[in-house]
Length: 158
Image (cartoon, rainbow, N blue to C red; front, side, top):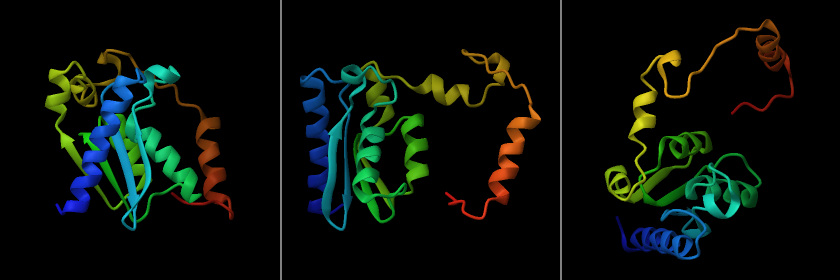
């Protein structure tokens, strides 16, 4: 990791501290960079927005995509103060950045009370045996929407 990348990672850590000190959410920060320039530097906003999805990475992805006027982060780098949780990892994969750097591990987060190991474990449990049960009720109307999507000439694949 070069000195510029280290600076971006330190900025993500500073954002984590800032959000925590302002009472906006947990101690997590994220920076998104394109072509060596910071597009977004932000932090967790779960508490300030009452939004459980307002993790630093998700907030940063939303802001960066809005700035770029694109639903993908092609050519971007993500710097996170901590290893992304499963939700954030999903958002990152959908956004398709070039690379992700992070400074603390999920074990470090767990030691501070942010333990997402249960979520990783739930992914391997059958739907009905999960902590929150999931019930599948097939409906042809639901799958017909996919057929309409496939047949649509103006669709934008992603």
